[in-house]
Each structure stands twice: as structure tokens, then as C-alpha cells.
Image 1 (cartoon, rainbow, N blue to C red):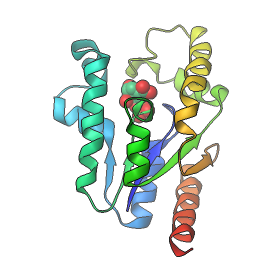
Image 2 (image 1 turned 45 degrees about the vertical axis):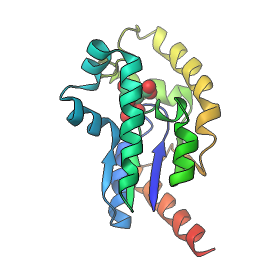
Image 3 (image 1 turned 60 degrees about the vertical axis):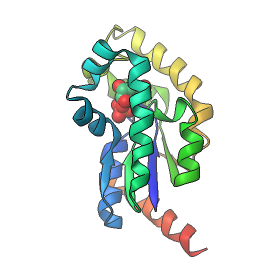
Length: 173
Ligand code: S3P
């Protein structure tokens, strides 16, 4: 079973995904990490040196590579479901989970971390919440295609446990 965790930057995909992988005893794959290793540079450098279009193509290829595993939990970059036919592909190859948080909560989390995120680092603290609200609204139609939609405004351990329970129930039904 392949489980793809999706959601906007800052929603907790990596922490929740690592917890879920440990509950399931599955390997955990962070798609951004795979890209950093494959390209030998940070995500921010990939945007700067290769450009976003090449980054998105590499991201799509890294996503396709996950299908070599029979079981894994995969944390996707926030934009991954929204390019090419990635969301459809994930739904065909595994189970998808959307960690949903409001734009306000995301903005308060991302204010502290915007420097390392290429899509956010150029905004002032005042501009950031406006951009997040707009981008989240644009991406919602993709995120909402996930098979599980989870309110992510809770501690990561609770979220991992909830997703785990729902996967087990779904498998048994
Ligand atoms: C992006 C999200 C990032 C990373 C890149 C682009 C996006 O991943 O893939 O900076 O378009 O939302 P996280 O969601 O893990 O921060």
C-alpha cells in the first residue's frame, strides 16, 4: 500500500508522515528530500538555478519513482498534487490524504519559516497571509481530490493515529 500525504506547505506532512510510517512499519519517503539528494542542492537552489518548471518536472519524475515500492508513506511537496496529472496518478497508485489547515494557521506557521521556501521568501510579513490565502484557494480543487481529508489543527501524533485507524478500517471494509 502506498500512502501519499498532501497539503499546503507548513501543514505537517513530514512529521505526520514519519509518525504514520512508524505505526504501519512502512518506509517513509519525503519527496523534497529525494529531490535534494538527486539534484545535490537545496530546493531553494533548484528553483534559483533550474527554474520552477524543471523543478516541477523533476518532482513529477520523483513521484513516479515511488511506485517501485510496494508499501511506503510518501510526504509530497505542497505543489506536487497541482501539476501535470499528479493527483490523479497518486489516486490510481495509492491512497491519498489531504492535511487541511486554514490560511490563517498556515500563515502564522510559515511566517517563521519563509526564508527556506522559494515560493514565500520574497514576500514581506504583511504580504505573506494574502499570498497564502490566494494560493491555497487555487490549490484546493486538487487537494480536495484526496481520498481522506483530515482537519490538521491537532498534534501530529493524533493525526498519524487517526489516519492509521481510517486506513485500517477502510482495508477491513
Ligand atoms: C512547494 C512546497 C515545498 C517544496 C517547494 C514548492 C509548493 O514543499 O516542494 O518549495 O509549491 O508548495 P513543502 O510543502 O514540503 O514545504
